[in-house]
Length: 126
Image (cartoon, rainbow, N blue to C red; front, side, top):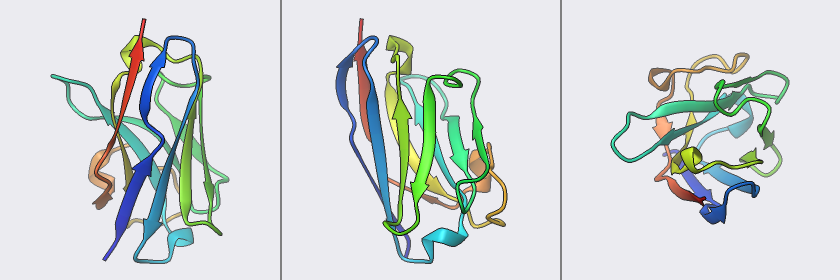
C-alpha cells in the first residue's frame, strides 16, 4: 500500500520561502514520477510541478515557474518543493502525488497520478 505524507506547510508572509516535503512508502520510490498539486478554497485542484524518476526531467506550471524548484532524494524516498517569493495567491492545500505511468516523464495532469497524500496547508499573508 502506497502512503504519501506531506510536511513543511504553514503560515508565511508574502516574499518568504517555504519547502514542502513528501515522504513515500509502499513501493519502489525511484521508479515513479512524483508531482505536486494544489487546491485553493473554491477552486479546482491544479498542477504545480512534477519530476521524473531520477530528477532529470522537471515540469512547472507557469504560475510557479522561476519561483519554485521540485527535487527528489531517492535514497530517502522523498520529494521536495522549494517555493520562493511566495504570494498570497499561492495559498492552498498542497498535495503530493505519485504516478503509476512510466517514470521517464514529468506528467502535468492529475489523472496521470494514482496515489495522493493528505495535503499540507500553505497560507501566505500579504
